[in-house]
Length: 163
Image (tube, rainbow, N blue to C red; front, side):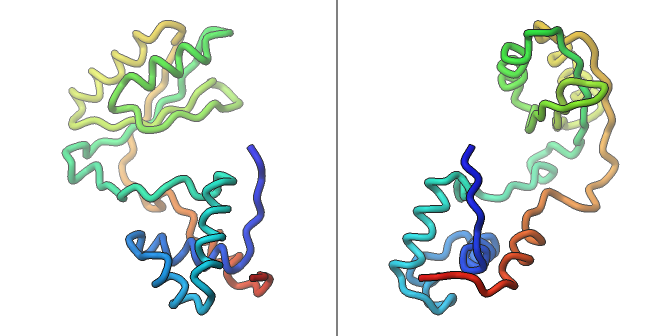
């Protein structure tokens, strides 16, 4: 993956779109005080380099009936990361998987509708070929949700951008 540093204009643009993802390029340029072409070029570059991966809606899984979030540390057989990852991707309630160092091989974030439903999801995970052991923790709350705003705000405070 290409690492692409962002400057303060990129950060301010990304903050604007984080707060109001339905804004058009023209409105972004007006609010940022730069040309429409500058905003379009910045967006094109941010997408091309993989910094900006899309504009999906932010979903509240709890409001959709998935009020239980759990994290699992999964140990897998050597050489099975690809097949296990594919197997986990086929389980709808698996939201995120990270390959990690330490005791386990994968950190899995999953959701469920209830404790009983979580047991079903856990059973599906442990039945994936290559999964050897799994340890699960239920999230009681999320005092700090996934965020990028502080990083963007730090960069936005600088004044190093060019048109």
